[in-house]
Image 1 (tube, one colour):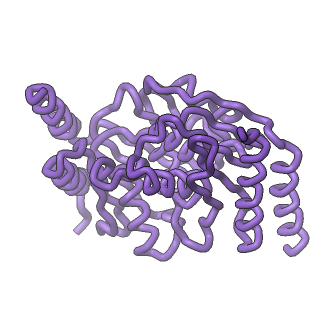
Image 2 (cartoon, helix red, strand yellow):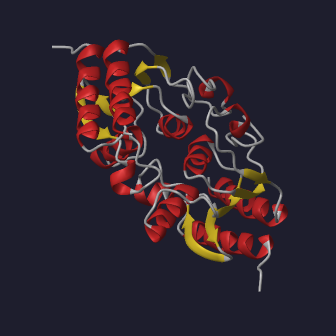
Length: 153
Length: 153
Protein backbone atom coordinates (compact mmCIF):
# COMPACT_ATOMS: atom_id res chain seq x y z
CA UNK A 1 0.00 0.00 0.00
CA UNK A 2 1.43 3.33 -1.02
CA UNK A 3 1.15 5.83 1.77
CA UNK A 4 0.10 9.39 1.03
CA UNK A 5 2.20 12.50 1.65
CA UNK A 6 -0.38 13.40 4.32
CA UNK A 7 0.39 10.16 6.17
CA UNK A 8 4.06 11.08 6.38
CA UNK A 9 3.36 14.70 7.34
CA UNK A 10 1.21 13.42 10.21
CA UNK A 11 4.24 11.49 11.41
CA UNK A 12 6.26 14.73 11.24
CA UNK A 13 3.51 16.46 13.24
CA UNK A 14 3.84 13.79 15.93
CA UNK A 15 7.54 14.63 16.10
CA UNK A 16 6.67 18.32 16.48
CA UNK A 17 4.35 17.41 19.38
CA UNK A 18 7.26 15.62 21.09
CA UNK A 19 9.32 18.82 20.85
CA UNK A 20 6.47 20.83 22.36
CA UNK A 21 6.28 18.48 25.36
CA UNK A 22 9.92 19.35 26.01
CA UNK A 23 9.25 23.07 25.67
CA UNK A 24 11.15 23.22 22.38
CA UNK A 25 9.83 25.14 19.37
CA UNK A 26 7.59 22.42 17.88
CA UNK A 27 9.06 21.42 14.54
CA UNK A 28 9.22 17.82 13.38
CA UNK A 29 10.62 15.94 10.39
CA UNK A 30 10.71 12.44 8.94
CA UNK A 31 12.84 10.95 6.16
CA UNK A 32 11.06 8.49 3.90
CA UNK A 33 12.64 5.86 1.65
CA UNK A 34 10.71 3.26 -0.36
CA UNK A 35 7.42 4.22 1.28
CA UNK A 36 8.85 3.76 4.79
CA UNK A 37 9.96 6.18 7.49
CA UNK A 38 13.65 5.53 8.02
CA UNK A 39 14.38 8.42 10.41
CA UNK A 40 12.52 10.88 12.61
CA UNK A 41 13.63 14.08 14.29
CA UNK A 42 12.28 16.92 16.36
CA UNK A 43 13.82 20.20 17.35
CA UNK A 44 16.10 19.79 20.38
CA UNK A 45 18.07 23.01 20.36
CA UNK A 46 17.43 24.01 23.97
CA UNK A 47 17.75 20.58 25.51
CA UNK A 48 20.95 19.77 23.61
CA UNK A 49 22.34 23.34 23.47
CA UNK A 50 23.54 22.31 20.01
CA UNK A 51 22.91 25.01 17.41
CA UNK A 52 22.51 22.40 14.68
CA UNK A 53 19.84 20.36 16.50
CA UNK A 54 16.94 21.29 14.25
CA UNK A 55 14.42 18.57 13.39
CA UNK A 56 15.68 18.19 9.83
CA UNK A 57 19.39 17.88 10.70
CA UNK A 58 18.60 15.30 13.37
CA UNK A 59 16.43 13.29 10.95
CA UNK A 60 19.03 13.51 8.14
CA UNK A 61 21.87 12.37 10.42
CA UNK A 62 19.78 9.45 11.63
CA UNK A 63 18.93 8.56 8.03
CA UNK A 64 22.64 8.71 7.13
CA UNK A 65 23.34 6.23 9.90
CA UNK A 66 20.51 3.98 8.81
CA UNK A 67 21.67 3.68 5.21
CA UNK A 68 25.39 3.99 6.10
CA UNK A 69 25.75 6.84 3.66
CA UNK A 70 25.53 10.62 3.52
CA UNK A 71 23.71 10.16 0.19
CA UNK A 72 19.91 9.98 0.42
CA UNK A 73 19.19 10.16 -3.32
CA UNK A 74 15.90 8.34 -3.41
CA UNK A 75 14.60 9.60 -0.10
CA UNK A 76 12.12 12.36 0.65
CA UNK A 77 11.86 14.58 3.72
CA UNK A 78 8.68 15.84 5.35
CA UNK A 79 9.01 18.78 7.70
CA UNK A 80 6.24 20.71 9.45
CA UNK A 81 7.78 24.16 8.83
CA UNK A 82 9.69 25.51 5.82
CA UNK A 83 13.38 24.72 6.40
CA UNK A 84 15.90 27.43 7.29
CA UNK A 85 19.11 27.94 5.26
CA UNK A 86 21.07 25.52 7.44
CA UNK A 87 18.53 22.73 7.02
CA UNK A 88 17.77 23.50 3.38
CA UNK A 89 21.51 23.35 2.74
CA UNK A 90 21.86 19.99 4.49
CA UNK A 91 18.90 18.64 2.50
CA UNK A 92 20.55 19.83 -0.71
CA UNK A 93 23.89 18.20 0.15
CA UNK A 94 22.17 14.91 1.04
CA UNK A 95 20.62 14.81 -2.45
CA UNK A 96 17.15 14.27 -1.03
CA UNK A 97 14.68 13.87 -3.88
CA UNK A 98 11.68 15.81 -2.64
CA UNK A 99 11.07 18.21 0.28
CA UNK A 100 7.51 18.46 1.58
CA UNK A 101 6.85 21.19 4.11
CA UNK A 102 3.75 22.32 5.98
CA UNK A 103 3.67 26.00 6.92
CA UNK A 104 5.84 28.77 5.48
CA UNK A 105 8.40 30.46 7.74
CA UNK A 106 8.35 34.11 6.64
CA UNK A 107 11.52 35.16 8.53
CA UNK A 108 14.01 32.35 8.12
CA UNK A 109 12.42 30.05 5.52
CA UNK A 110 15.00 29.44 2.81
CA UNK A 111 12.92 27.66 0.15
CA UNK A 112 10.18 30.14 -0.76
CA UNK A 113 10.24 32.90 1.90
CA UNK A 114 13.38 34.87 2.83
CA UNK A 115 15.30 33.26 -0.03
CA UNK A 116 14.85 30.63 -2.75
CA UNK A 117 17.98 28.69 -1.94
CA UNK A 118 17.56 25.97 -4.55
CA UNK A 119 17.23 28.54 -7.33
CA UNK A 120 20.38 30.47 -6.43
CA UNK A 121 22.55 27.52 -5.42
CA UNK A 122 25.46 26.68 -7.68
CA UNK A 123 25.11 22.98 -6.79
CA UNK A 124 23.85 20.76 -9.60
CA UNK A 125 21.37 18.74 -7.59
CA UNK A 126 18.01 20.41 -6.88
CA UNK A 127 15.32 18.72 -4.77
CA UNK A 128 11.68 19.08 -5.69
CA UNK A 129 9.75 21.25 -3.24
CA UNK A 130 6.09 21.01 -2.24
CA UNK A 131 4.81 23.45 0.39
CA UNK A 132 1.48 23.79 2.15
CA UNK A 133 0.97 20.12 3.05
CA UNK A 134 -1.34 19.98 6.11
CA UNK A 135 -0.50 23.65 6.40
CA UNK A 136 -3.22 24.47 8.97
CA UNK A 137 -2.17 21.78 11.45
CA UNK A 138 1.52 22.57 10.99
CA UNK A 139 0.89 26.26 11.48
CA UNK A 140 -1.47 25.75 14.47
CA UNK A 141 1.01 23.75 16.55
CA UNK A 142 3.67 26.41 16.24
CA UNK A 143 1.44 29.45 16.72
CA UNK A 144 -0.22 27.73 19.71
CA UNK A 145 3.21 27.20 21.23
CA UNK A 146 4.19 30.86 20.92
CA UNK A 147 0.79 32.04 22.23
CA UNK A 148 1.26 29.96 25.39
CA UNK A 149 4.82 31.30 25.74
CA UNK A 150 3.60 34.89 25.53
CA UNK A 151 0.84 34.25 28.13
CA UNK A 152 3.41 32.86 30.56
CA UNK A 153 5.52 35.98 30.13
CA UNK B 1 49.17 39.28 23.51
CA UNK B 2 46.42 39.73 20.97
CA UNK B 3 46.71 37.18 18.22
CA UNK B 4 46.17 38.21 14.62
CA UNK B 5 43.45 36.89 12.31
CA UNK B 6 46.28 35.26 10.32
CA UNK B 7 47.31 33.28 13.40
CA UNK B 8 43.83 31.81 13.71
CA UNK B 9 43.52 31.14 9.99
CA UNK B 10 46.80 29.19 10.18
CA UNK B 11 45.16 27.02 12.84
CA UNK B 12 42.22 26.47 10.48
CA UNK B 13 44.70 25.53 7.73
CA UNK B 14 46.20 22.91 10.06
CA UNK B 15 42.71 21.46 10.44
CA UNK B 16 42.33 21.38 6.66
CA UNK B 17 45.62 19.47 6.43
CA UNK B 18 44.24 16.88 8.87
CA UNK B 19 41.25 16.38 6.57
CA UNK B 20 43.54 15.91 3.58
CA UNK B 21 45.51 13.19 5.40
CA UNK B 22 42.21 11.30 5.70
CA UNK B 23 41.41 11.83 2.01
CA UNK B 24 38.63 14.27 2.86
CA UNK B 25 38.14 17.53 0.96
CA UNK B 26 40.56 19.72 2.95
CA UNK B 27 38.52 22.37 4.74
CA UNK B 28 39.25 23.43 8.30
CA UNK B 29 37.70 25.77 10.85
CA UNK B 30 38.36 27.12 14.33
CA UNK B 31 36.08 29.00 16.73
CA UNK B 32 37.77 31.76 18.72
CA UNK B 33 36.54 33.36 21.95
CA UNK B 34 38.48 35.92 23.98
CA UNK B 35 41.58 35.51 21.83
CA UNK B 36 41.62 31.71 22.35
CA UNK B 37 40.70 28.80 20.12
CA UNK B 38 37.82 27.02 21.88
CA UNK B 39 36.98 24.52 19.13
CA UNK B 40 38.50 23.06 15.98
CA UNK B 41 36.94 21.08 13.14
CA UNK B 42 37.83 19.58 9.82
CA UNK B 43 35.68 18.08 7.11
CA UNK B 44 34.80 14.47 7.91
CA UNK B 45 31.94 13.78 5.53
CA UNK B 46 33.34 10.61 3.98
CA UNK B 47 34.74 9.07 7.14
CA UNK B 48 31.57 9.75 9.14
CA UNK B 49 29.08 9.39 6.26
CA UNK B 50 27.24 12.23 8.01
CA UNK B 51 26.03 14.86 5.56
CA UNK B 52 26.39 17.60 8.19
CA UNK B 53 30.02 16.81 9.02
CA UNK B 54 31.54 19.92 7.44
CA UNK B 55 34.42 21.62 9.29
CA UNK B 56 32.27 24.53 10.46
CA UNK B 57 29.40 22.43 11.86
CA UNK B 58 31.86 20.23 13.72
CA UNK B 59 33.66 23.25 15.17
CA UNK B 60 30.39 25.00 16.13
CA UNK B 61 29.02 21.89 17.86
CA UNK B 62 32.26 21.50 19.80
CA UNK B 63 32.15 25.18 20.76
CA UNK B 64 28.53 24.75 21.92
CA UNK B 65 29.66 21.93 24.19
CA UNK B 66 32.59 23.94 25.48
CA UNK B 67 30.47 26.92 26.54
CA UNK B 68 27.38 24.81 27.36
CA UNK B 69 25.29 26.95 25.06
CA UNK B 70 24.14 27.13 21.46
CA UNK B 71 24.83 30.88 21.68
CA UNK B 72 28.31 31.97 20.59
CA UNK B 73 27.67 35.72 20.61
CA UNK B 74 31.19 36.96 21.26
CA UNK B 75 32.96 34.29 19.27
CA UNK B 76 34.44 34.42 15.77
CA UNK B 77 34.89 31.60 13.28
CA UNK B 78 37.81 31.16 10.88
CA UNK B 79 37.26 28.81 7.95
CA UNK B 80 39.60 28.11 5.06
CA UNK B 81 36.85 28.16 2.39
CA UNK B 82 33.74 30.30 2.07
CA UNK B 83 30.94 28.49 3.96
CA UNK B 84 28.07 26.77 2.12
CA UNK B 85 24.42 27.57 2.93
CA UNK B 86 24.24 24.85 5.59
CA UNK B 87 27.29 26.15 7.43
CA UNK B 88 26.51 29.82 6.86
CA UNK B 89 23.05 29.14 8.29
CA UNK B 90 24.47 27.40 11.37
CA UNK B 91 26.90 30.29 11.89
CA UNK B 92 23.99 32.73 11.67
CA UNK B 93 21.89 30.78 14.21
CA UNK B 94 24.82 30.57 16.63
CA UNK B 95 25.09 34.38 16.60
CA UNK B 96 28.79 34.24 15.82
CA UNK B 97 30.18 37.77 15.72
CA UNK B 98 32.57 37.62 12.78
CA UNK B 99 33.22 35.09 10.00
CA UNK B 100 36.69 35.09 8.46
CA UNK B 101 37.17 32.92 5.40
CA UNK B 102 40.12 32.22 3.11
CA UNK B 103 39.21 31.34 -0.47
CA UNK B 104 35.89 31.92 -2.21
CA UNK B 105 33.78 28.91 -3.20
CA UNK B 106 32.21 29.94 -6.53
CA UNK B 107 29.68 27.07 -6.68
CA UNK B 108 28.31 26.61 -3.19
CA UNK B 109 29.65 29.61 -1.26
CA UNK B 110 26.73 31.27 0.45
CA UNK B 111 28.30 34.50 1.73
CA UNK B 112 29.58 36.27 -1.38
CA UNK B 113 29.43 33.73 -4.24
CA UNK B 114 26.28 31.77 -5.18
CA UNK B 115 24.21 33.81 -2.72
CA UNK B 116 24.64 36.54 -0.09
CA UNK B 117 22.81 34.73 2.67
CA UNK B 118 23.26 37.34 5.38
CA UNK B 119 21.78 40.03 3.18
CA UNK B 120 18.63 38.11 2.27
CA UNK B 121 18.07 36.44 5.65
CA UNK B 122 15.04 37.53 7.63
CA UNK B 123 16.91 36.86 10.87
CA UNK B 124 17.88 39.97 12.87
CA UNK B 125 21.41 38.93 13.73
CA UNK B 126 24.04 39.41 11.02
CA UNK B 127 27.66 38.35 11.47
CA UNK B 128 30.45 40.47 10.05
CA UNK B 129 32.20 38.83 7.11
CA UNK B 130 35.84 39.13 6.03
CA UNK B 131 36.97 37.09 3.04
CA UNK B 132 40.35 36.59 1.43
CA UNK B 133 42.37 35.95 4.62
CA UNK B 134 45.45 33.85 3.64
CA UNK B 135 43.54 33.27 0.44
CA UNK B 136 46.49 31.80 -1.50
CA UNK B 137 47.28 29.12 1.09
CA UNK B 138 43.62 28.27 1.60
CA UNK B 139 43.07 28.01 -2.13
CA UNK B 140 46.28 26.02 -2.73
CA UNK B 141 45.47 23.22 -0.30
CA UNK B 142 42.10 22.57 -1.89
CA UNK B 143 43.18 22.88 -5.52
CA UNK B 144 46.19 20.65 -4.79
CA UNK B 145 43.85 18.04 -3.34
CA UNK B 146 41.64 17.97 -6.43
CA UNK B 147 44.64 17.92 -8.78
CA UNK B 148 45.97 14.80 -7.02
CA UNK B 149 42.50 13.22 -7.16
CA UNK B 150 42.27 13.82 -10.90
CA UNK B 151 45.73 12.35 -11.48
CA UNK B 152 44.74 9.19 -9.61
CA UNK B 153 41.64 8.84 -11.77
